[in-house]
Every structure is written in C-alpha cells, then in structure tokens.
Image 1 (cartoon, rainbow, N blue to C red):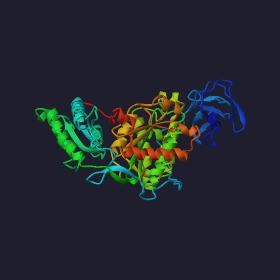
Image 2: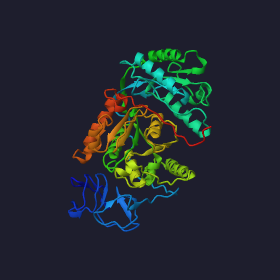
Image 3: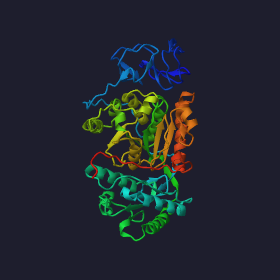
Length: 498
C-alpha cells in the first residue's frame, strides 16, 4: 500500500485508488511505476497487470467478474470493460473450513440494559404503537405525538409508531409476511410496552393477528380496534398511560454483552466499503461472538458470488444445506420474475466504484468476519442462536433493516460510502467508509471507518468501535437516527394486492 493506492490481496490484478487520479499520473506499486491511462476517482480500480478478454478481474483475492475487452496496465477498470460471471442456481459441495470464530463463553464485560419479565433484554425503554393496517397510519402518528409529549422522561425513551402500507388487501405469503414482521416487533425487548392498534375490517384484524403474536404479557401489550371505540385518540392515550406506568418499573442494570444481538447491513456502498467499513464490522462481529453475543447478516442477493465463503463456515452440513437453499431460493425468486441474478449494484454503488455484484458481495460478506454460521433464518423469524446467523431478506435498505430489527437485533450497524439519513425501529448506526463522508454528513454518520486507510490500526479502531457500541447499548449515547427521529419500517412484498 502507498499513500495513494492499496493492493488488498497479493492475487489481485487491480489496485484501489485512495485519491482521484488524472491521465498521465504516475504511481508506484510494489516498486514498479504504473502510469494511469484515464481519469480515476477515489475508490475505483486501476489495472496493475494486463488482463485479457474473458480473464478474471481479481479483487480481495477472488474473481469479481471478467474482462469484456482487453485491459492494459494503468487502465481504469469498471463497468465499461468488466462483466459479471454470475449465473442461475448452482450445485455446491460442502467443504468445511476450520478457520472460523466461535463463542468462548459468556463474557464478564457488561452493558446497562433492561431485563424484561420473560428474561429478554432491551437496550431502550420505549413504547411502540404497532398498527395492524396502513389505513390508520395517521391515527397512530397523532397518538404517538400526543403521548410523547406526556411521557418522554428519564425513565421512558419515547413513544414511537411505524407507518407501513399493508395489512389489508393482501393475500397468502404477503399477508403472512406482514403479520410476522409486525408480531416480531410486538415482541421486541427495546419496547417496554406496546399498543397494537387495529382498524377493525382489515385482513390483519386484531383477533387474527393475535394468533400470530402468540403468548404475550397483558401488562406489556394492549390492543385497540378504532372502529369499536367512540374516541380512539382518548382511549389510546389512556392505554399508553397504563403502558407508561408499566415501563417505569424497569431500570437499567448490568447485563453481559453476550446478550447483545446486532444486525449487520450496508448500503450506498463505494470502493472503500470492502476495505474499511465492512471489515470493521467483521472484526466487531468476531469480537462480540467470541464473548457469547449474536450477529445477523442479511441482503441475500449481495451474497451472490461470495456465498461459498459463508457455506464453508457453516457449523455443520445441515446448516450448509440451509445456506444453499437460501441462495438458490433467492435466485429462483429473481428468475421467477424474469430478472437476472446479477442486477446489482445500484447506480450509486457504481458511481462509488463497485463494478459487479460479485465485488459488492465480496465486500458485503466481510461484515460477518470469520464467524461460524450457526443458523439460517427465514424472513420474519427471530434469533435463537448465539453466533453468526444469516437471515433471508433483500438488499433494499429499509426492508432489510426492518427484518434485522424484527429478528431481534437491538442495534443495526450500517456501513455506507454514499450516506443515507434513514433509520429503522432500533438504533441504526451509520459507519462511513471514507472520512470525507463523515466530515460532510455529521448528522447522518455516527462512526468513521475511513481512518483505516489513514494510519489507524484495525485493532485499535475495532476496540474503539466496540466501546462505542457498549456505550450506545447502555444509553450513554444515541445514534443519529434516534436524535433526529428517523425511525421507519418497510415490509417485503411479492404477491397480489386486491
């Protein structure tokens, strides 16, 4: 690595620009001079060796596609001269590796959390309004605003509602997905109390929704069907008064970090995502897993091309088979809708230096570090196993962040090279992959991983980041999405709307 470029792996035939280059600029790579032939932006790739047509372009030590035209030393390497190697569903062979991180037992390190009656642990003491149907989004919003003015204090972290479009006119799996995600949110331990608000005539009416929720604490979960009450605002506020009294019975106490569940996510990626932000999350994930904690990785399309890395870290052959099904089922979903499995990255990703889905995937899976994959969860299911879990879900930022929260993640860690202000229903920590973004968007970015290419060691930054997350879980810090009230959900949709 020089101050202006980096070679990630010895097998790579490209280097990564750490600054903008102009045609004719000279760089030194492993003692050899390379003349840059084109304008190249920071985060993009430059050929360090000649690459013939159909020869693999290699980054991270793995192919990220193949040359679609001859590439000379010093050429800009991107979508104009590289194409994907991806294809449809594949057969895989179980080739387990021993190079994986596992739990070393419950850690003595603690954070200050809320222990609920059922033993679950929360990191916030909030009251959530979960509406069964989109028709009453505004009703829930008005109630949340009024209740927040009455009840936000040192003991209650706020009253929140989460607008969505669904719950009525849905059929089959779509309705079931809506019910599963909403029921998981009802059970989320960051909510000390939950008001389930229904309309009364929707597919997802309260009596039906209760079947999906299953067992619940009647002190913690209250219900209102707004068609059945004269003044739904007043009645809702009365119920929230009861929930607030219940929420105030909980106090923060020392809890082992082994109880932490953390979602791993990336979006608006750039050429630094696989160099700074995602490896930092991987190191964090490994550290948390070693101390008995849980992490969960989703965005299945962004595993395409790097899936064997995860498959080989499966804890056993049954888990390996689950990963194979996870990958091939999502490819079948693409193909069923007449879409290519490689339709990614987005225009913003390409602008940031990501050329193919394989390249994005090889960066994406780094968020899982070297953790042993202990389980694979269907969409809308909750975490049950400590360690690294995989969750079925798309790459869409809001849908996948919601799914991570619904799975039980207390916090979602979100790396980005382009930036985004949104947040999920839980603290959504934005980690910038480059320093310029962190300096430009201080109201969006919570932590800067760009320091990894500016001299700070991975070990030091990982320790700093781990301390930051412990403070966040303890309530000593807030993520920017919490400070500015950016808390949203989105639910996966595939089928027919009546």
